[in-house]
Image (cartoon, rainbow, N blue to C red; front, side):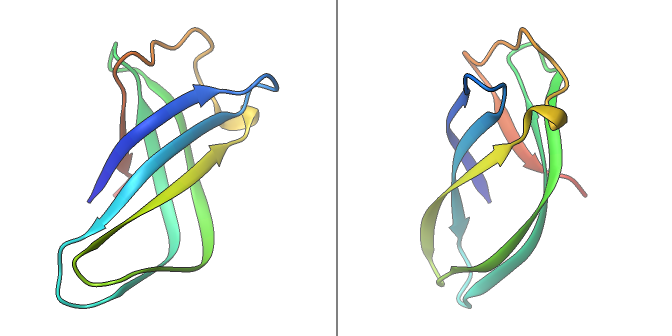
Length: 91
């Protein structure tokens, strides 16, 4: 499960998203590829992309913070409302 902590647009147009990745299972999980979508307060998709991650291990019953940077080329909406936002894994 992922919980969004902070989202902000950098000066160069990249979208920086800090999330908590929670592993509620009894086994460690290793993430290698993560397709993500960010929606803003209006419910609009503001960015989506797939992240190749090396060695992201989340131990059993722990939470790990992680920052994902969506390059400006993956940002789909300029005037996004980040007062409320969500991040989700694209199925």
